[in-house]
Amino acid sequence: MRFSQLLLAAMAALTLTPALARARNAADEICPRPAAGSAIPEPADLRSQNGTLKVELKYRSLRDASGHMRYCYQAGDGSVAPNLRVHPGDWLIVSLKNDLQAPRSAASAKGSAMAMPVPAATPLQMPMPVTDACADQEMTPLSTNLHFHGLSVPPICHQDDVLKTAIGPGDAPFEYRFQIPPDTPPGLYWYHPHVHGFSNAQVLGGGSGVLIVEGIERANTLLAGLPERVLVVRDQDLINPDAAPSKTSTVPQVPVLRDAEGDILNTGTGEGKPSKDLSVNFVPVAYPDYPPGVITMKPAERQLWRVVNASAITYLDLQIVLGGVAQRMGVVSLDGVPINEGGMTGNRIVWEGHILLPPAGRVDFVFQAPPAGSQASLMTRSVDTGPAGENDPTRPLATILSKADATEPRSTLPASPAPPVRQTSVWLGDVKPVHERKLYFSEKPSDPNNPNSPTIFMVTVDGQEPAPYDPRSTVANITVQQGDVEDWVIENRTRELHAFHIHQIHFLLIGWNGVPVDEPFLRDTVNVPYWNGASPVYPSVRLRMDFRDPNIVGTFVYHCHLLEHEDGGMMGTILVQPATKR
Ligand SMILES: [Cu+2]
Image 1 (cartoon, rainbow, N blue to C red):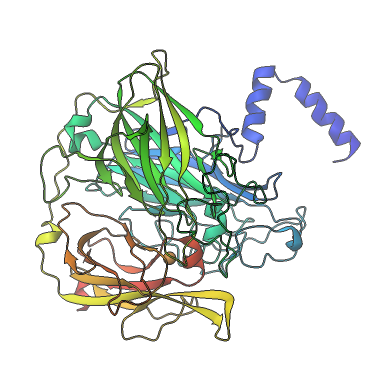
Image 2 (cartoon, helix red, strand yellow; image 1 turned 90 degrees about the horizontal axis):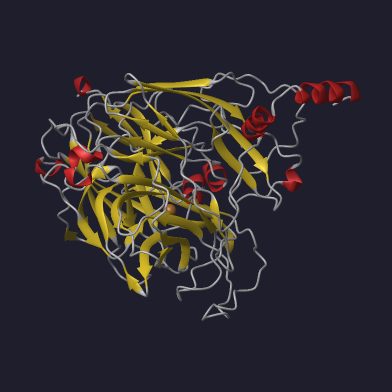
């Protein structure tokens, strides 16, 4: 900026009222983050009106003081990662402007270990090339797109396509425009970028937000009138990677071993340095001391807590502890679907002492605040991710304070619920599958002679040649007919956990390691246990896959939702052919 411009800018600033200037500053700040230990803020709420939610979001990035890349969605008022609140049948119109900035130099690029090479510096003053975002451009670190995780929206450009949609930083705002299907189960969904090869870096950097399909109190009237609290748990590269373990650690001498991707391996002790730090609504809870954020509630008040694990790779096992005792968490919904959906009617609440959430998993649960003056802890227990998995130790996430003068959450569920939206299709568990397929997760070193070379991650249809996802391939890995229901067995032939996810549809978990499971609700993400290295039978899940929705035709993806694995090739494509092509 030249001196004359500076002077003009200074004069313009003088004419603003202080309040307006502050508001402008808030809107200008790129991806701001709350301080460690602060009150956990609620994301802003953007609500549909008269059947439409129209939102303008900027997708922005910043290299922070510790050298990590931040990514975030910001609304016009500067609010970060707003909740998109819609009703079944509403139209959602999102105008997304890609404001990603090229890092200053490739050498300074510090992202996840799987981040692809960043192209040489693009001078910021140079105009970015304009691209056709629907035209199957090459995915780059500066391109982005949106996936609306869990929604059954057509896999086509401007709706929920991630195979060909790549919005460049020089492009005009890109419009997503689609109807929330009227039979969408009310619950918790989320949005995030899905640029193959770069999803891990963008989600680790904070690229995610919540989408709520309103009306969970219609599916479960026990929830009527409850205040609701949205909690987004994200992971990120360690803020203090070189810090010694906290003095309070009971196992201070756990050795730090790393995998070929540079991630800290599971210690198997439940302790030790984590592979990633966590944050709750962007309040960081960093290794080694894990200063928790603060949630304040009125004594004994019941609230609906809506938690998404928006981590790129970290598993959560949520628990609330008071005086050393696990508190009851009343689960009402998983992966956006009320657990009394489908087979069961009535107001179902399942009381649990802890809840496993794989990356991308969501849970809605009822929690009653502790008695006045007491203090509980929201934490994640350690998750055994397998000998080749990342280290996810036990650690706190937030302190829960019980105080009479606590501020109520911004949003409260309606006290007089409308009747539930009836599902018209036959319950998936009662439909006979017409096909059975087996898919398996596997890994191998990229250099067969060097076990420490980068890992190739694969998900393969049994009988096909194992290969990582190839973006240039024009042939889908799986072809199915719209209208069909199939049973898929997903095997894990590796020594670490994977989380199977498919776009566009939900599925029913009907078997776990060969044992039938009777779940009366659907999921969109499921954990697959790791192989012990010796058993002749691989661990598996059996899923009933629902391709009956006439709106879901075309090509889309299934993949592991540990995004380092997805970026590394653990993804495949499925073509749903129109029923008339049979
Ligand atoms: Cu995986």
